[in-house]
Length: 109
Image: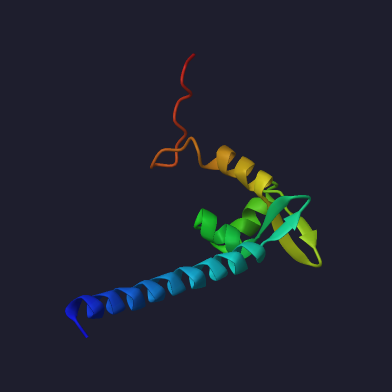
């Protein structure tokens, strides 16, 4: 077998492995995207999802809910948060804060 044929065979095998990895990633992404709950076309987040998103503990989420700052729904004894309510909560609590946790002054129009 010539060097050109060996190189061609090597490249073909490498390309097939590479494409196989993309196929596995594609299947994984399909599985991950279908695992989320949806209600009326809106994605629902559970406590674990929201803790990771906000980088807070479950207890902190409980405090936000108890104080009425973060609204949730309960389905089959499971607490879930709609994307809409989470976005509203983030806008109200995280968007206008500087590093010290103090609100920045509103820009004047």
